[in-house]
Length: 241
Image (cartoon, rainbow, N blue to C red; front, top):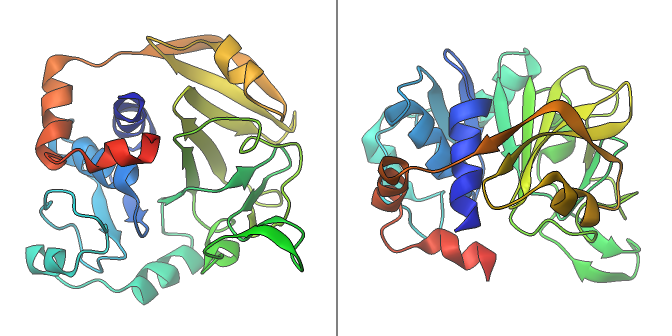
């Protein structure tokens, strides 16, 4: 599954020791990737999220990453406290799965089309506008990299990192990109063993360039087994359908 490459890319390359990582609602890929970083790659990260528990032991993946049963796996750490950390500049990583993202530093999870008469009304921003510019590293993700997602200009700006100085990454089923504010462009830093930079370029409507060295991410059997242990019912596969 392509989502497994996304999980490895995040766990191995984008999460680091001594970081506080916040996982949002229904975030299958960030959920597995965060626990993989901590428990498989042995990174000393602190995991929290909408399940409002501080660095819990993982449960097998359920239909919602807000599963209240995970509260029994560690001490309580509320979402309000995570927001306070962000405001103080102490929240290291946040994940977000936007419906659209552009090369101007904007994300959209509000509407497709005009705001007054949208073609599709999406779940909405929640705290996106507040958190995106404050978190030290935004990791955006999409399992369906296409010109409908990677757009020249989002239909509605739910949140923006354009005027922040934080890091922004975009992880998709085709590869991993890092945002360059100097070039106003997404720089491809990694692809998978079954994808290429050309795949990313052909399926993007925004500015995208290759880095001087583009890494190739591969999966081994032990990594696949760890991912399957956290998601034995393969709920992550539903994202690709």
